[in-house]
Length: 96
Image 1 (cartoon, rainbow, N blue to C red):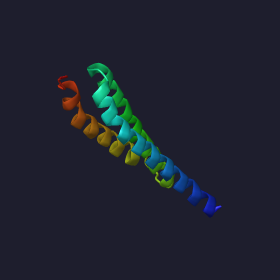
Image 2: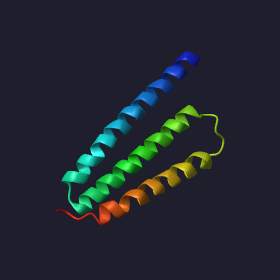
Image 3: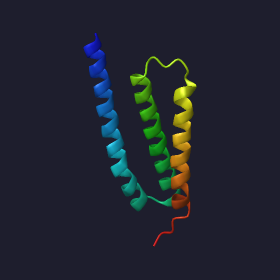
Image 4: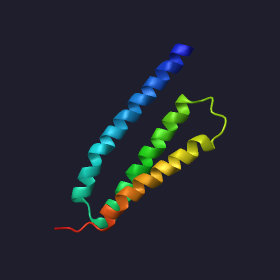
């Protein structure tokens, strides 16, 4: 039983790393080829998806966590920092 749980955790980590790497490659493409409003929503969606996926992965690994706020609060803070870091570039981006 312990071996299966270990395998599930490794599989979840591999899937998360693959999705995060794919999204990291996708962000510059989105920034280069989409219009302003579409680019803004696409980048926000990818960031939120990455943060939710990372938090689900953390919840899967740390099943013994009793307090849900231990997971929700860092997830929300990470999402806010990422969005705040990207919004000025996205909103004030001037097309050539």
